[in-house]
Image (cartoon, rainbow, N blue to C red; front, side, top):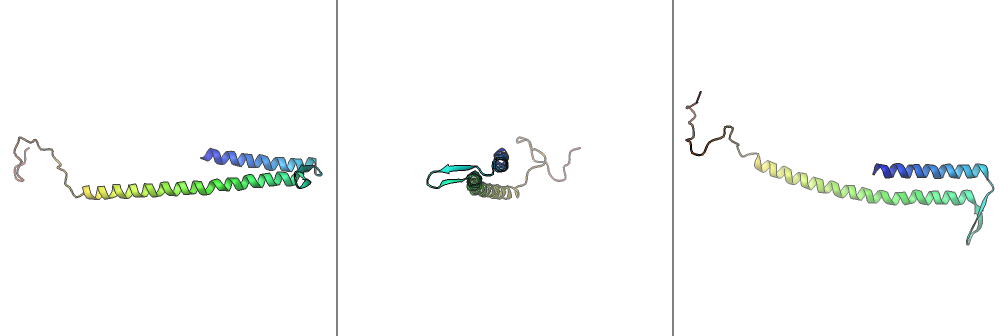
Length: 112
């Protein structure tokens, strides 16, 4: 996802540079927009830039929602595993393996 963020930042920066360059080179340039007549090119480029920026903000809530859903899933899984671990902890594990067909050594019978 970081690549998407860097690419969107780079595109926004390039759009901003294009707007500034057009404004400095041709400050009086105008564009014919259907239904509005002619408007300064700076306004059109600024509007396109603003719409692109707002479209990027549509992506952010969806991404945050996905992360929150994954976090809830991980928390449930962790709680399930911790409950299973708490259930298994009280069981004592034999420290010395016992061979089934041999008698269990008594506490006082230590082998050297």
